[in-house]
Image 1 (cartoon, rainbow, N blue to C red):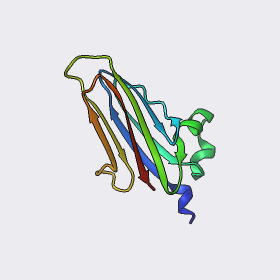
Image 2: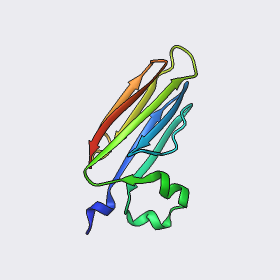
Image 3: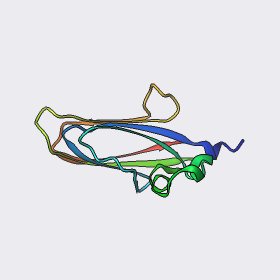
Image 4: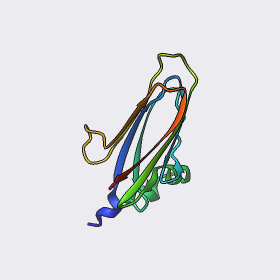
Length: 115
């Protein structure tokens, strides 16, 4: 089995009251904010890629073996009590590998993770 082709991860973003953009390895994965959003991410050569639509292939099949990068851009559009929360899960489905939360009016967040 070629495990490099079966790399997967999952993100969860609670972006109520925020406009959000999430890039994985420089690719906008389609998170917009203003709601709760979750997405499954896959290795660039994952066997399921051929079954996905071209848009899904471009946005969700972005992972690579080794070091990967996550970049968030956010801007508050709601009230003072709104909070942005982002989690990325790799190995353990219950324990996030990358976590970020903020109540700031705007900002960015960058982190690398290993697969």
